[in-house]
Image 1 (tube, one colour):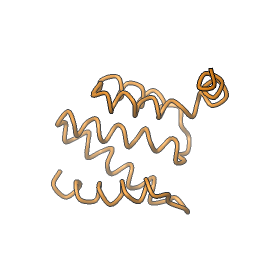
Image 2: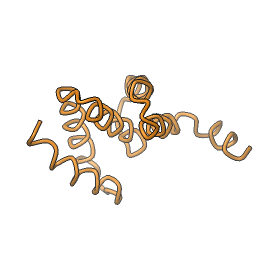
Image 3: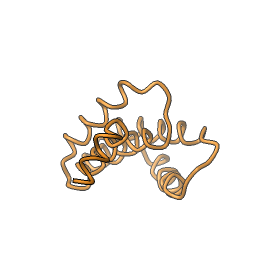
Length: 104
């Protein structure tokens, strides 16, 4: 019940988390679809929305679609590079993604 209340209040913010859940359940098609729908309506990226870009990068890596993976890895690096403050997740992802990019 509490989750439903929180989701109703922050429905827009939970979309990228939902895409992430699909990713962790190995439902890459659904994670990609959910994340792409969300970012299509985003004018400027903040941390919650950057999760959708992360999900897209990771989903395409899992599907071995290197072209799309590289596109979203680079977009994630560009978006999060502009953040004034980077939380531990962003810093971890940036370090990890920096190791992937040269090989793609």
